[in-house]
Length: 204
Image (tube, rainbow, N blue to C red; front, side):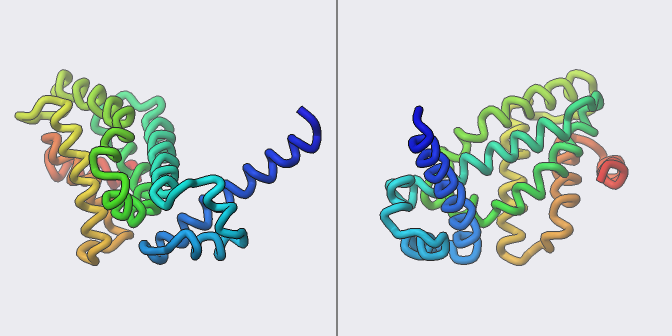
């Protein structure tokens, strides 16, 4: 590969990264932001944006993929070296929440464009990790639920989406949402509310 080709590739990658960063900011500010608006904010012509993303839906889909990867990274880091299932869940949700909060308006927007099933499909690897963790907690008696682990993982996932919607609708303060969501997830898994509250206070 020649130096010229390498330079062109680097510029293209930098442009793509800038478009994604600006698009996230613009879409969080205005969920109806057009490709023209995003191009202007990024300081590029519309053709450049379309050269990287053939449609607004493709751009949003890429942002959702990045959000899901950020969630997966936060989850893995938070659970590393933690043996207690309840503490693992608490640390995971507390770590996921700042990432989810950053992207919550995007996720609400994506539900109109990517489809809920598309988001669920993207979250599958993260959900599989949660299922294993919940199953271990159920087996060890740390958790108690009439639901099997895979169904309980879906409940937890939908609870977090619901809390994000509550914040979006002004029903819950964003600064309280992370801890509240974590306590809610733990109690849904059968952890007594007093224990869940104590655990969240200890790890946050």
